[in-house]
Structure formats: C-alpha cells, structure tokens
Image (cartoon, rainbow, N blue to C red; front, side, top):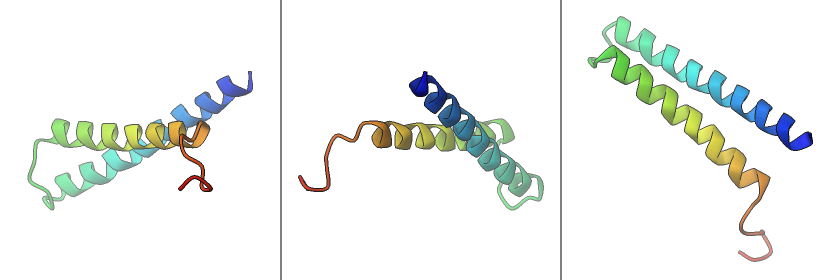
Length: 70
C-alpha cells in the first residue's frame, strides 16, 4: 500500500510540474517572447518536466549505486 501511495504522489507531482512548465512557455509564447507552434511547445515542455520527475523518482526509489561504492 505504501508503494501505491508513493507513486500516486510522484505522478501528482509530475503532472503539476509539467503543467507549470507548460503554462510558463505558453505565457512566453503568447507574449511573443518565443516564436514556436503553441501545441508543440506546450507538449514538449509538459513531457520533459513530467518525465524528469518520474526519472528522479525511479532513481530515488531504488538507487543503483550507493555513495560508498562511488
């Protein structure tokens, strides 16, 4: 049950982080600071932030290398 709660928290955090990145780039594009297709820009920003949080969670959940081994 604890593992399910952990991943629920991580996916919630990943979604919020992705949304924040998307909103910031949407605002930059709408104010003409960035010249790019809106859907592509928002999609890439969301996926990059979302996957970054998931990757970090996977590394923290079961680290493959310990500090003593480095």
